Length: 413
Image (cartoon, rainbow, N blue to C red):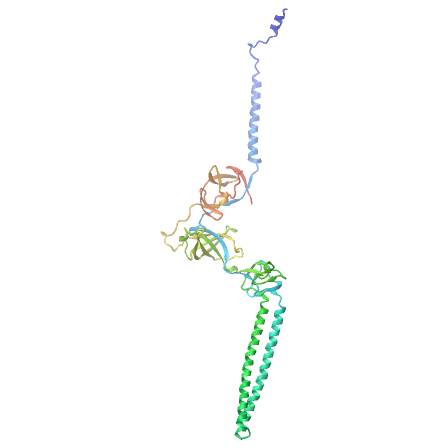
């Protein structure tokens, strides 16, 4: 056979139809692919729903701007601090070295209670010297008094004898002069006794200055000195001299001072009812009333200071605590004059974040966080008035950047 014929036999015929797989094999392959896709989808969804780690968050409740709940509406809210009208840093009235300090922070003291002692050796010696001088002056007064009494008896005898012509009138006059002179000496000595007594009192006062006492009843909030240190009311000695032993606060004098924007000060009146909420105890509402509006404005902050009394005192209230005050509607004021309460709810400022150029909060829906668009309003310290969520809505306090709409969350206890 020719070589060309052999090559022709070996050539593949491209025009012939390709062999087809059986129908059963194609169905089997399609079924396997569908099962694999479905398994991957179900497995991925199960992992996302059950195995994805929940984001831990803190939750807060959106509150109505009226701190009185169903009572009078809040016509204004302002922030401030708890202050003490009666507070004193107790110091010695003389310069001296502390021998002991009898107070500790947090201790309650009564008026006149001893807080500390100063070294008093010199003061005791001065008192003893003054007392000795006083006793000497008294003895001298007794001596002069005795001499005066004797002179008076001599005058009486001389007057009797002059009538009998036994002594001269000159002798009687000399005796009378002696009495007058000694009477003057006695009076002068009485004054010396008074001077000596005053010296004793002065020395006693100096000794008493060595005992430092509480000027009023209160609680010690700071202990500023230790035994062995020098204290002085004049700050003598620079950094080596203490100017106070401790600071006492009269807890019964605690009140609230708030700064009210001058644009809203017309909503505040004397004796107006208020409710105060401490930042440390947000669920505890303390009733109170306005004491006074300080008649001056802060030019830099455009605010007016208002003093507020708390009608309930508690050991949980301490100076310099942050507080939010709601000025309530005066029920005695005509409704036409009463101011409208602010609209919206109060939420922490940190709970408002930006997403796609909008202000949003994340409301809790079971174990999911749902993004809600809000309209922010006036700011009250760390709280802000917003519209877009209802009263009582639980929201995330501080949303992180990884928190998205529908994300699974776990609220910290």
